[in-house]
Length: 265
Image 1 (cartoon, rainbow, N blue to C red):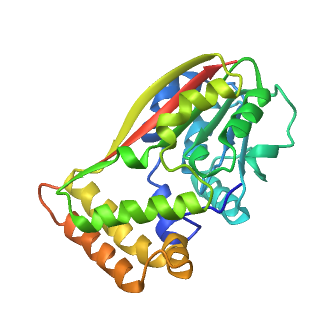
Image 2 (image 1 turned 120 degrees about the vertical axis):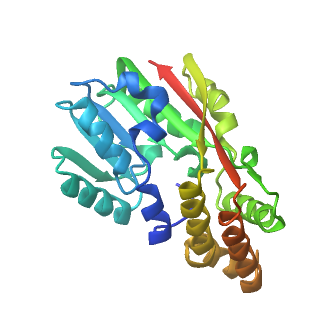
């Protein structure tokens, strides 16, 4: 696993709690049927995991994340939601020590953009899927994101994020690579799906812009940018102000393209 660019600061993990099955796994919901066993790779704080667990119940669910802190957050999310029976593990996707062929669905959301070797990760996921099962994976594509107005501070944010993420060994434009990575991992029956997150409604704009205005200053990404000379504090303050300005723009638009693959094993 590479260094996780976003880290586990509350500005990061709290924003992830917005994610659920409908807004983040729409391309694969037909596979999430009662009784199927599910492996959720990179579960984060667990909002997607819990939602999927409800859909596959009484099927067996295992959730893993490389971060012990994230796993504890996911356990707490499951407890708060009253969802029992999920097995949570701290593990690296590259070397998951689980029985091969033991899951009907192997799922990962916003994971491959952060791993050291996406092809190796997908290959391991393929081996964990049972014959006739599916591997369902989705990642965003940073270079494909678009917004209006084209504020220079947000352009600066994008350039900075790309530098920091790549320094960490990740691929921030993972969405466009998914099909190629799947083929290289030995997956043959692959369907590529393009989806988007649209953060342009007034309430979404206020949340998204406000979250990034804080995250650039407080999360691991900002700290790393300072430590490694990628940005100064003044740079981060300027970007934060740009996010605030964008969030208050009545014509503001922000769209996140996401590439997903549904692979039958």
